[in-house]
Image (cartoon, rainbow, N blue to C red; front, side, top):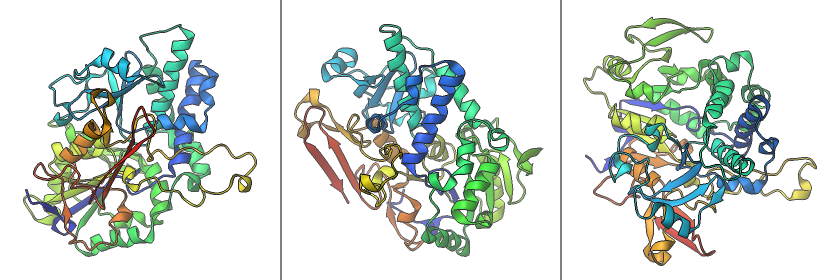
Length: 462
């Protein structure tokens, strides 16, 4: 495979919507998502009202790349080889001694196939006994589930097995079912409709120009999102303008990823839409337009016709390894660009740095941005294993970092980061023949804190 990747060489450019084209105000959206689930658990399922109360410090628990063992309520951070780097029971972090006693140097028990689970075709949650947190919609749920485990452990005097996950799934259905937006039900969509600008950032003009540039250069452009058409229209109009759909040759909503890519040969059919309601099933996709559900195999047949090429080259931008990057790469052999806001670093925006006395008297405490470093969990990319010697000699890549370099062509902090580059710009792609950090653009700045000291280790590669 070529060492470099260029958009100019692609025939088709596809995008996810949430956290890819549409960037959220993470502190505000995190609070809303958390409250949406907490309100449901307390009001509908009778959980402890303490779940509704949070401190700013509580948000430090959130870190992408954690897996929750649904049987015992333990959160796990894995190394690239499948061994456990850090763990917590609920929100209580396990000590290095407890880690050695519980896990030793063995693979985590839900790495069920082989030792190098990072290279397997699925994430650990394939067993149905754990859940992997890899996007910003999920992360507030990690904090909520950890606090649920704390509460149940306290109430039941050291309870060791848990059965709360079915209630979390019920909360997902309540807040995000297909009809929730139209019916204005649940705790999420009504608030989003009332205060959209509080939760969502408009696309910069540079990104809008870049999208038009792609079309002007003859690229077929696609929007493929698991969000439903009504929510997609709300977001698209706000971030890109009322004619946002004109920027894309093909729009697919309710795509039900990762199944959109992976359900083969039992592909879901595409549906036409009328007033945001799904209509007839389509045995194949014959022309560009706006559709619901569907599958990548039938879509690719349409792309062959549109490009008049037997194997058009497709690149897909997305933020979720589970739903976007891994399945598009593994099942469809598309190029993939991971949107990874952790690469933005710990930016301090003017409004976040505003003196306390200038803020509203009753303004709730600020939520730590979910893309910033967690003091509890350390870096998303690397970690130190204090029980194996001094920190300088024990830096290891995380399981998440391994998957990024395995399944992504490149990783970028946002579309804005590349919007002003020429389309023929040559990015260095991830490759087994180069550094694990070669595919990050514009650079990698890994920061982590030792578990036992306040010393900071910085690892930077350009």
